[in-house]
Amino acid sequence: MKTRYDADFSELKGKTLTTIENKNNEEIIFTCQDGTQYIQNHIQDCGESVTVEDIVGDFEDLIGYPIFLAEEICFEDVNPDGVKVPEYQDSFTWTFYKLATIKGSVTIRWYGDSNGYYSERANFNKLVEEEKL
Image 1 (cartoon, rainbow, N blue to C red):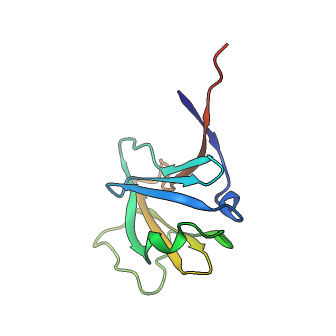
Image 2 (image 1 turned 120 degrees about the horizontal axis):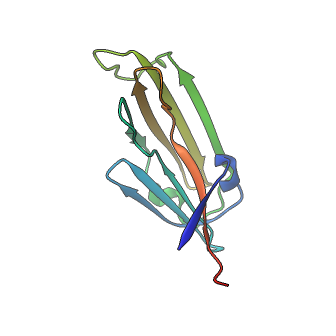
């Protein structure tokens, strides 16, 4: 069984990815050459929705090359230029996750909205295998 620990997205910098799995725009799993795994997702609660809105670039450009850029840019209750805005917004957060190697780059754009009482951000966790006693 694997346990999740909060991690900073920048931990991917310097790592070499072997796979990236996008599961229905609700969860992305990053597996590194050193065996480390990270998961990006959001555990949904009532009154909120947080999903991947768009992915720009090709994940294949990130596989097999060291990551030299891993950054998170967040816009809370502000619509960034150039994004399609939903018809109605109460409380919302756009979060852009940017990754780059010498081969190319990818931007994962998450969009979260709620009634203002819930988290609107994606989680980024390191998955660690639990040791058996």
